[in-house]
Length: 450
Image (cartoon, rainbow, N blue to C red; front, side, top):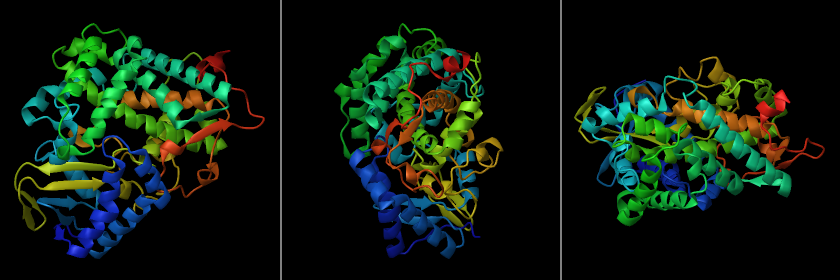
């Protein structure tokens, strides 16, 4: 294996650009485009991308791959050791405030910690950690968060009972109600206009620098968020943010909402596998104990993590070097872009026996956590501080919904390994199994203690 970056010839650079990077851009880095995501599933683009990168890794003995995209030099790494160097070296000398990321996120979160300067990061990162409590498996306000989940799960159960089905659109509508309550409070649950404004700005953000900023919409988003943060309801992230720094708070909230959107997609995909595999569903339900709220649900958390491994919601991790960087026997100029293509590392059969299989156990026994190539919440000093909040909310929702005997359309593709390389979560639809238990409006904790 060599650590010195190699310049790809024009043909190979074009293959990486068209087979690896173009499908990621087409699907939307900031908000997924349903038609492009459906197209990606039909063509299983992630499988093709992995094949291209695996071939180039073998040919160049694991060297980072350098290609030109217009005026930009981009280095695509292919070994976990290189991922570790990038993540442990963030935010200096590898800043997460990558040029393309700044161009995208400035549309709706210009003050967010991800695209902050080193100076601003020194107080914005600690602020996020104070609010999100990454050191705690269950947040101080975990009981309030799981109450929001229970309420949302009950709404989904009623719709399932009334219509006999649950599709991605219905799931997403209720998911946003849960998220708004967790972040901003019960009064925000029905504020669909806030979500619509955020989605509009995120659609602009998909175009990064190629789309002008809509200052009117951004001001509207800020006004709505400020109205909840200024007088926050207890048991919310808004209340914790107001206590930690009312001036800083509104600028960080858009990123929390943005991150929760990806968490919803991961939960929906995990639910599809749970519905297709009775043995997985049984294990999810087995760890739900009566009277323990908010319970830590390790196996349900591992199912969500496994969903994120198999179908990453962060399609590519980007860094820019802040100065000249010596890598192997080569020095790259400051401003060089680096990319970690998640789908490639997350299903690498050279490292993972369970590359295309559903193996939550690998998160429980430490195998996956020790692998620098697996980055569902990034890693190193700038890893996502909201990891445990997200896993608390998603694991409890997964457990609530698993209490209903669901079937998933096209479940035969998910019932056994290997699993599809690309999954369009927008196309997922659930119903009740024939002869299965009727849904109730109570979640697993209530059901278990009845």
